[in-house]
Image (tube, rainbow, N blue to C red; front, side, top):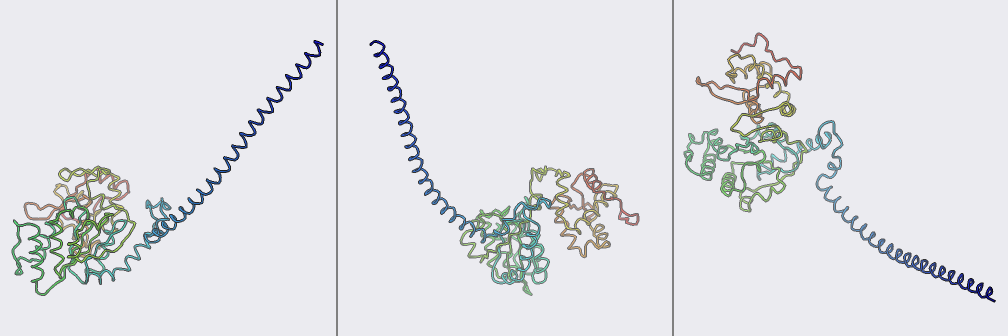
Length: 403
């Protein structure tokens, strides 16, 4: 009997174990079921969220496509595709953009009869404006070019240049207000041009007007408004500030009758950077001597035109051939440049001089005898090494005697 009871107890124990295992399995199954149900609901929520995100993304893409189409999106899509040329935008895009802008020169010339122009957009516009002045303005207007990207630019000095170049003091205009303010000087210039006989129209060209002109100054804005309310004065300026329209107050905009023209060129800001106090190229303050390097000379050389390069190379040869180290007379340099057909007039060489001075390659000084002397601002050993690396001969022909 004892054996029978023990066997029954064993059977009961096995049944309890089986029941406990089945209950554990049921619990696990129920948990898995709940987890699957929860997962299904989360998936449904995720689907609805994804649909909303897709709708939002599609609307954002449509809006972005609209702005890209409006702001030269076709060109911006081609960024970083031409690494060999050193340009972030392919050269073909730059050339097509430049061609379209050149085709607008006649329109700009017509606009100048009624408005004052502000050219804005991405890229340097110096070469574009120089081409516009050479092809259009030179034939119809007297014009002055001012480089506002230079650290020593001054609006007062610019107005004095106009006053003295047009000989307004000797043509019946009021005397130069040397002790007066810039607004009084602007009035004197405007009145002097209006009294000229025969009457002429004068265009003032400002490169990078938002750089060192200090448009935040109320006095400077009053001077500009005084000048350009005169019907004989016309303005065409370039700006690179993204908020350039906010630099002018409402009274100046209305007085100057400004017209804003998009002129995106995608050109590098090489000349603007080299003309400033660039720490990248090792430029120091204006008071101390400029320290050029091989890399900065390479950048300058690449930015020059072929005629500018030829004129600069000839100057370097003349300076190195001159034993007294006093520099080279400007007219000797001009005589040789004209003989080699590097320039056709004194004005053309003067334009090269302005460019070389902007890059801090040369300086102009007047000696005790009153002769205008051209001197190199770059160290002689450095510039010799630069041209020797390019395998360029720096010796003048024997018949080129200028001493």
